[in-house]
Image 1: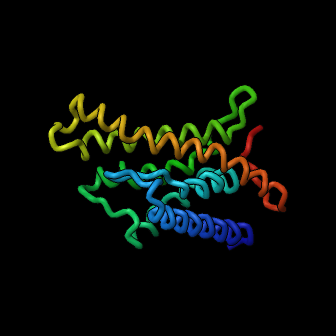
Image 2: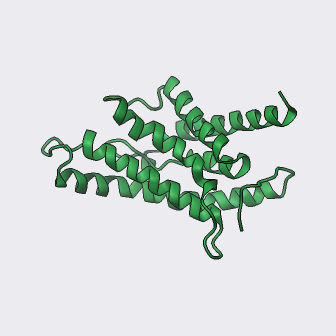
Length: 188
């Protein structure tokens, strides 16, 4: 293995560990938790940063690693069937790594565009899961009521997660830029 590959794997492990720690700490902050699952998730920040540092392919690996380690430690424990689990956990966690794929638009950095776009993908995934697997007892899965409930339930915490990430990720990136670490996937 080349030195750069080992260094990238080390960074990936650090990003995964940081995401797990933030995910774990977030479980003990009641204001971040929604009553029926979902949360304002600050653990997306290391995965987003990994996308701009290591590129989207390795960052998707960081997202999958975050999911896998979280699964092993019981952080992702609401399971009905494989499709629900994919929509609630695997897809939203891994898609965060795609942030650096999105180009800058006009004079808006790809950090903002990428964060918003992966936040939307994450939101759509959790809404679909809510519509088909978590409707309230009095509603039928896939019904208009289930759509309204899932959209209104999931928009709150997903929107706040995006806003927090839009504020914190550029701040952290600016701090990292002052070090010798190169963030080659930022387009300004």
